[in-house]
Structures are given as structure tokens and as C-alpha cells.
Image 1 (cartoon, rainbow, N blue to C red):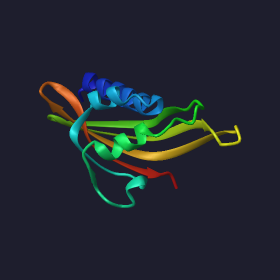
Image 2 (image 1 turned 30 degrees about the horizontal axis):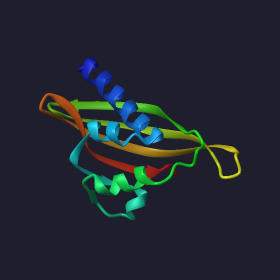
Image 3 (image 1 turned 90 degrees about the vertical axis):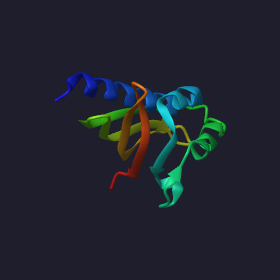
Amino acid sequence: MDHAAEAELLKLSRQLLDSIDSGNWAAYCELCDPSITCFEPEANGHLVEGMPFHKFYFDLPGSGTPKQSSIVSPKVRVFGDGAVVTYVRAVQKLTADGAPVTVCADETRVWQRIGGAWKHVHFHRSPCA
């Protein structure tokens, strides 16, 4: 087991979620490969390729209410220049009427070492059952 790589990948995954929660497009781009692919609920079952789909959501006006993501029960598997990070993402936020709520999603993040750095190359996100 490569514990240093596992720790680094969990740290990068945390940074990725922080960039999403804060709407920091520049930080998100720094972590992602431009050819990233994904399956996520917003894509209605279709494979999304590239960054423009994601930029649309970063460009939407923020709700003005705080939110934060927690990584629950993470597992990391490193294989050569690739890695898979799986976890439950718990997002704490406020509803439209100001009540606190936590929503969860199952996430799988695929990372690849490109040019000596880990880049996020694919993800699959599904709402928790």
C-alpha cells in the first residue's frame, strides 16, 4: 500500500470538493484534466466530456448561503499512474427557507498521474438511496 499517495489523493479530493462548494472555478480547473468525463444526475444518464458542462454550474449565481462537503467512509485504491477514490459526500447547506439540511451522494473519483501531478479525469456521482 502506498500510504503517501493515498493521503495525497484524499487531500486533493478534499480540495476538489472545497473548490466546488466555494465556486472557485480556477481551483477546480487546476485539479481537473480538460478531458474529464463524468456520469452525474445533472447529465440525465449521459456521459459528459470536457469542462464546459461543469463551468455552467460554476457560473450560476450563488445562493448566498454557506455549504460544506464532508468525505465519509473514504477508500483509496492506487494502481500505477491511476487511482480511484470512493466515498459518501455529505453536503450541509440551508434550504430556501433557511433550515439546515444534509444531503448525501455516492461518489467515485478517478485520478491519473499526468506530467508528475495527479489530475481528476473521471467521476460518477449518484444520490444516496
